[in-house]
Length: 268
Image 1 (cartoon, rainbow, N blue to C red):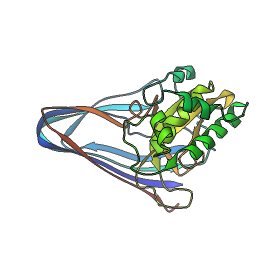
Image 2: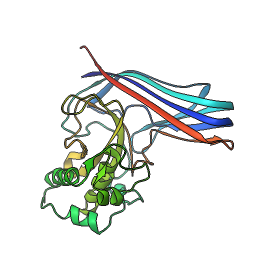
Image 3: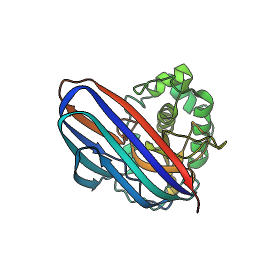
Image 4: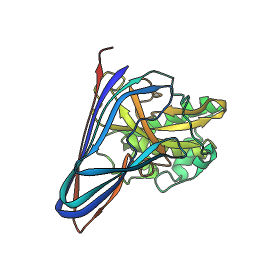
């Protein structure tokens, strides 16, 4: 599938700030399931700094903007060709040992309810167990936009019984780790839901490390594995760690955020 992406993030400030420094993880991952044809990142009034590929195989680059400024727009425009690998992350070069992803974070910390959900499935084999855990999370947390906040934890989302893709990913990560499987959070884009409904927003899912297969993606929110509708950007322990944009504004100003994402299929 050939996909065209437009992603704009606007930061507005109620008073001019002195400067802005950002770390961007907005370049698609290099693996067998996707091939980038064209990809441009721009920051209004910004200067590109150094870039590097981290131990998880993600490309990270720095940007700075000198003030005074009251608005900054980060724009991504790209063309990418994807193919279905049944969720298996093949050809992705990284140096971090998968066992590192057994580490818990505030967003993915387990509790009695998550432990009970994790042990409610009987799968023994790594891949079967991972599929069953994803199905269990899908059944326990209904997809309800706006039901949770960016800082909602997996335990809180499970108690509420509602959430968005971030909550499904956090809960699945917690459950996988409870059953001894390394798991991590993945940020990216989704072209459309299974019924064909356009998904004009950033997206997130989980990857679980299952034996010789390695990392396999699971989107518990949509009850499927990532296919050619998905574009993978980067990964981390949880949503804050895998955030596509991280940064700091210098100045006593209040920030507001507006995000626009459009993913469009183009003719072969």
